[in-house]
Length: 115
Length: 114
Image (cartoon, rainbow over all chains, first blue to last red; front, side):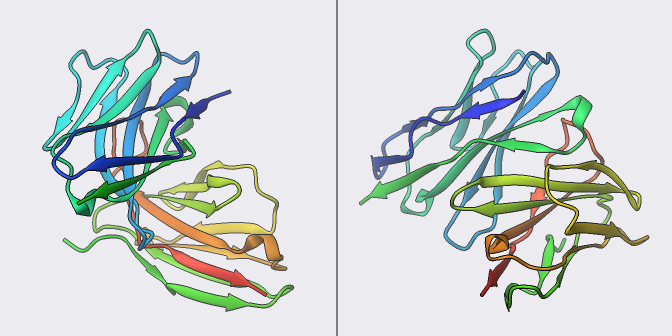
């Protein structure tokens, strides 16, 4: 069974500082995709970053980077230079090549950026 | 390019009624997935449609059903509503099924069952 764990229910970070949101997963599959989504209070899920299981380089998208450690089965999201607008729920998600578009989501981390 | 749209955005229904939610994917996207989000259970996969065919289904009772039309628009239906069906229902679209294609989510439909 696929399982995604986000152990930080809530996190606080000072504006302009960097923050790391943890995500670990458990799977025996070799082919999968790792995603991070942001969900503001409005409810919409906003795609942030993607990492394929065979990608050798860590993914980066602007202020977001993914610290992918395949052997440890972790895919932590790093947000650099935090902004007030980064306050939201953050979800780690996985998708597997043999289950189509079905996402498995973690329980989420609530990030609050303090001015 | 317009994003994923969902209608209605808010809905209040009574136990025992049925409800239909609609999702229009991003133009050109052919895969649509539905998720239920509740405080207790988190985000759970309902089903996925591609080219008008259901490709995958989550662990939900048969009261939850869906379909996809030839223009890729999708609807989901919940019959005999229960209080526990109160949730945010999210629709997501992608070009194709497959783990390398990102999904774009709509704003969701917030369903309240009283």
